[in-house]
Image (cartoon, rainbow, N blue to C red; front, side, top):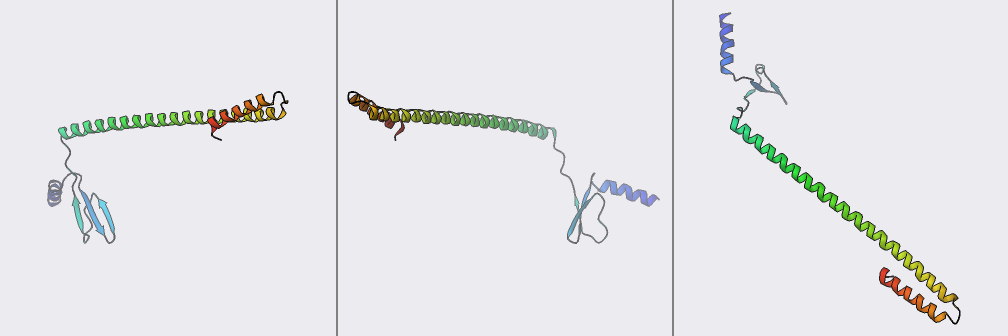
Length: 144
C-alpha cells in the first residue's frame, strides 16, 4: 500500500496538470488523458503556458480594434452598395424616360407624315414642313 501511494504521489509530481498522451496504434492516432498501453509509441503533449495579464490585455485591445475595423469596413461596403444600387435605379429611370420620349416623338413623326399625306393642296406645304420638323426632332433625340 505504501508503494502504491508513493507511485501515485510521484506520478502527480512528474506529470504536468492535464497531461495529454498521443498514442499511435497502427494507422490510428488516439489522444487520451491516460498513458498509452504497453508497446505503443507515446508522446506526452503539454499545453502551452497560460498568457499573462499583459498578453490578455493586448489580445483584448487588438480584438476590439479588429472588430471596430471590421464594422467600419462593413458599413463602408454597405454604403457603397447602396450608392451603386441608387445609381443603377437612376440610370434605369433615365433609360425608361428616354425610351418613353422616343416612342412619343415616333408617334408624332408618324402622325405628321399622315397629316402631310392627307393635307389639301393649300395646306400641303405647311403639313410637309411640320412633318419634316417632327422627323428631325425624332432623329435628334432618338438617333433613328
